[in-house]
Image (cartoon, rainbow, N blue to C red; front, side):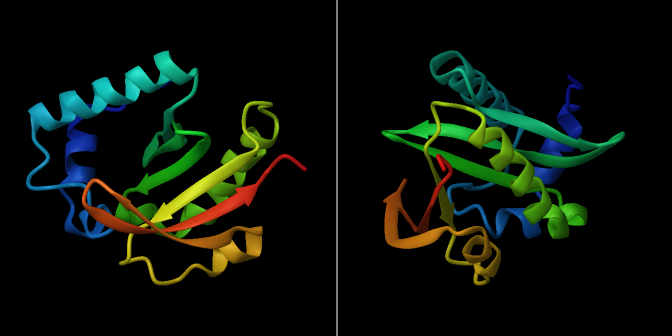
Length: 149
């Protein structure tokens, strides 16, 4: 697995176009924040046996994303660099193929920031909006997708 250089993650997380859709991101994302972020993501792999991956297209870093266990449902998150914003649906579809092959995952949750207006792709995949969720002092639109079939 190719390791993401710190400077790429710092640039991604400090890009205003990325931050706009990450309401839990507060202030500058510096080395200390990155260390905490990487530690938290590594801990998910230890606790849940699953977590986030770096996403590459050849030698080009597209972003990061994956699955995290939230109570009794698996949450899918995806954060792309601006140059890869149009590739989210294709990447999500690949991740859902993985989810369908993992017996632990029956339902996938998508939490979208209010800044994400278009949800047509989620609807085409069969995800159903179930209302709002309040997390970390922020409000998200919640969608659920049954991947067990």
